Length: 292
Length: 161
Image (cartoon, rainbow over all chains, first blue to last red; front, side, top):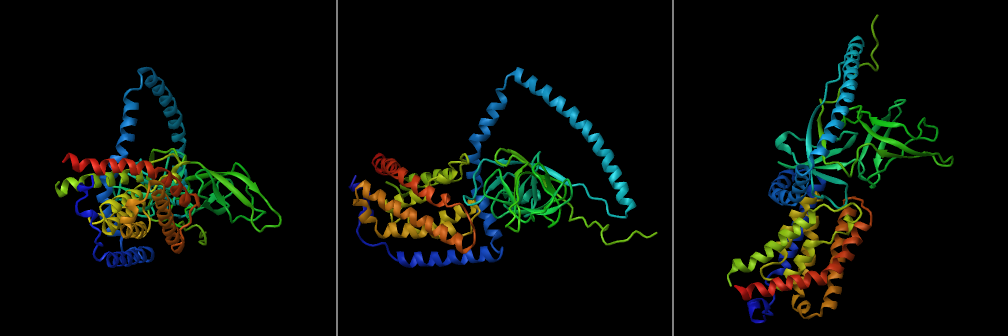
């Protein structure tokens, strides 16, 4: 054992260790400064990200395999049951969709009357969440499409029930996204019932959002649906975000204490949809008078 | 033994460490994920300080920063500092009994987390405090086992070659 250590047990000091560590620390500080101040390092980040991609694949593989195994060993009986359920669901959805088509046409007609530009339909694409945990300090997730597929920073991500988050970093084949529950995330929302606008701020808890900027007399109550308002430009308007959970009005405080529960199952989703929205639609109906 | 056969175990353990670092964990225990790469680098820097020291730590740190999406250089600088201290005192640490070594490792990971916390503070990234003290506790608990396991790899592989 002792012999096998070879020259490593030589008590001689490692040459230039102090110098090397100082240089590396200075380089790191330089990197952090550049990374924090500007986005000069996106290229480097993307390069290393591509190198880490195989590791992500390997980590993701067992989960993917497990899901595949689960899918392929489901019994015929279960499949038939699920098929029946899905068919019923499709019928329902189709019925709703019919109404939606009619409404959309009506909406476009009315907008035409108001000489407002028609809202452009958003393009969506399904992405799968990779089973890798990202930043320990943030509510992040990694999805399996990247800049190669046209993903861009700030892109909105939704699931079947509501808004999930937005893209904050694009690699070539994967992208990182921040969830709406992250403490540093805030998104402009409006109450679906009355159009009251406010901002929903993440709390760091996966099942809670705060609405810190509502005055005590604001018309909001538990059960109200919050949808994206489209202000700010990052999120297209009209996607459900959360349902108001509690409203606590404290007379001595300037703002009411309002919490909401995200509509999307932030910690359970496996597939999400990325939205390619047209540049923020400027509705010209405010401030413009209809000429007689 | 050849250079390659000596490097292989280190490379493999570091690769597995990276996988463990980004492996998904259920929400509740996620903050308690040990700093696998920090622990591995402490061990290898202690045993083979000529081949694996601050340079390796820095590269691993940058890779970790990219995979976590943290500030580029944050984990790099933290790993660099603790590996520097380890290499500086590697002869001393080698003769420590396991209990004393574990205490030293506790201090090293605490320093590592403190540097991360400090940089987050400067860059105004806020996170619940459990994300800092959680890994210190689990890392310290796991160290003796990891140490015995890695010692097995370290001292068995060359004799077989």
